[in-house]
Image 1: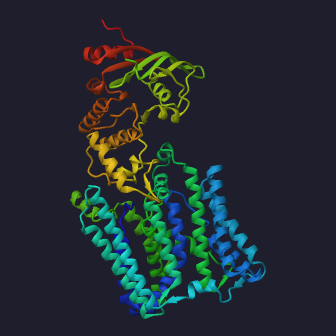
Image 2 (image 1 turned 90 degrees about the vertical axis):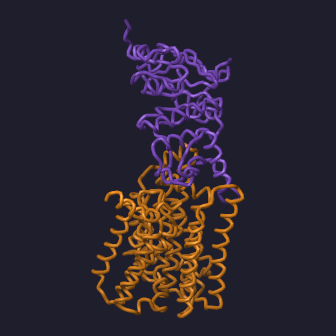
Image 3 (image 1 turned 90 degrees about the horizontal axis):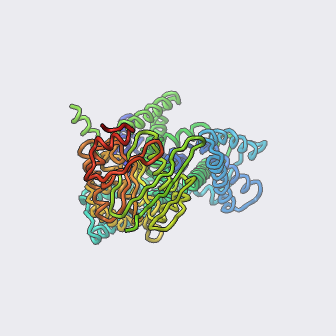
Amino acid sequence: MRTRGTAPVVVGLALIWAAFYAANDRFLSAANLTNLVLQIAAVGTIAAGLALVLLLGEIDLSAGVVSGLCAGVMAILHVKQGWGPLPALLAGLASGAAIGTFHGLWITRLRVPSFVVTLAGLLAWQGALLHVLGGTGTVNLPESPITALAGTFFGPAVTWPMAGIAVLVHGAALWADRRARSKAGLPLPPWRAPAARLLVTASAVVAATGVFSQDRGLPLAVLIFVGLVASVDLVLRRTRFGRHVLAVGGNAEAARRAGIRVDRIRLAVFAAGSTFAAAGGVLAASRLLAVNQSSGSGDVLLDAIAAAVIGGTSLFGGRGSAWSALLGALVIGSISNGMDLLALPSSVKLMVTGAVLLVAASIDALGLGKPPFAALRRVRRAA
Amino acid sequence: MTPLLELRGVSRRFGPVEALTGVDFEISPREVVALVGDNGAGKSTLVKIVSGILPIDGGEVRFDGRAVTLDGPRAAAALGIATVYQDLALCENLDVVGNLFLGRERTRGPALDEIAMEREAVELLRRLSVQLPSVRAPVAGLSGGQRQSVAVARSMMGSPRLVLLDEPTAALGVAQTRQVLDLIARLREQGLGVLMISHNLRDVFSVADRISVLRLGRRVATFETASAQEVDVVAAITGAVRE
């Protein structure tokens, strides 16, 4: 249930890309775009978990350091304790789930605000990461299925059929939905809306596949990231659990009176959010080929929150979608990547990212982003 | 005919304050009873007792002629008593269908069965003649009267027999008030008992069959709307003696 369309973000992204392309035409090269999506996969995955937490109207300030800590747990178990790559990876994700459950219990049982609990987590889990890494401060990952996450690329022979199937499935789902409505005698929305959606999705998928094919191929990490976002989207829009998450974010008291176990929903969302943070940490470690003391610190948390908000998820709960993580991460990643290409200093980078976040949040506050042209109507009415 | 709901000598204290004292009250199926009274007269206390939120200190509650214990909202709901609170308790970010089915979603396998829910929603709203721009519009975009209608329609989801409405027309414009009063009349046509609290005597006179007046925790008067005069009701509310 998206109340703010994705249109403004897409338009904003197009403007950003056009500007960087004008400044340096290497920005839209296949090699750079592949780098770009590899750069955002980790933060975007963390942002997907944060989007869930934000939908409840809560916050998780520990997502960044939890991503680092869980990657650290995985790296130590794999490299120092000799665990196999898969068990180590699962243990990393499980630590995320455990941390999130701990936060959730503290928030729901003791009624301490999530801001405080996760702020404490931000400090404590950073300490835990330093402790886990021990004296060396860095654990390098040898080549393994873990590093293969970011190091595997699928060639055109695999990606084109995958792209075709994705578009077909999307189209078939839209068509089946329409057919079911028509069979049930329900009014059919104008066919243009689903057709436009299919067209946009299909062109995005085809363009992305084309770009990846010209370079190294589709990175596995990106496939995982997009798959996770799509799964969260399905859960939010199509399941009872997702409906209850939106209800609690929209009006927790109303949800409680409707018989929804609000605390259980909160607990599950915090657990899921930290598990996504752990997954993001694993992807980041896989790309860096190491976990070190600064893993998950620095800009990671703020970039992830900014991504979700820029993508259209409200900080006040109840409004937003999983895709906000992908779109917002693309915006943040594009700015960072483009400015690196132009060799601009971090000072400029930070200021521009801040400005974009402010503009995106204002679009939300002014209601400019409500499905097409609400702003235009508003301006006309005022005139 | 046995009344649907009957209170006999019901009392309720809050510490030293006696909010209700020996109140008798009854409502039949297919009847709209308005509960009026000044602030602090005990209207909200009575509604909270009937909706199961407050236990009684003395007296007896009978439903369908049987003595019952209303020890919680679930007990009230199980008897078929639905309450629409003044704050409506809607999720503004969800659409009308989502709100109507909140907490009782229909599913097919792991997925929500949106088609079945939308059909039932449309059918329910049609039965109540509630007009909405779209059942797929978020509630945030609806007017106050439409929201009130959605909240009342949601109370009908469990097929209740008695609906409690707390100030259903407060803060509504003229046309919207009309919508809601028409909706109350239709609940009566469906055979339900409707108990409404209201401050607005004009609304009360236009829809209620009987008017019960509470004053300082006691029921001081009951009027048949058809034969009542507004001045008499006002006099009962304020405790003034009419010359």
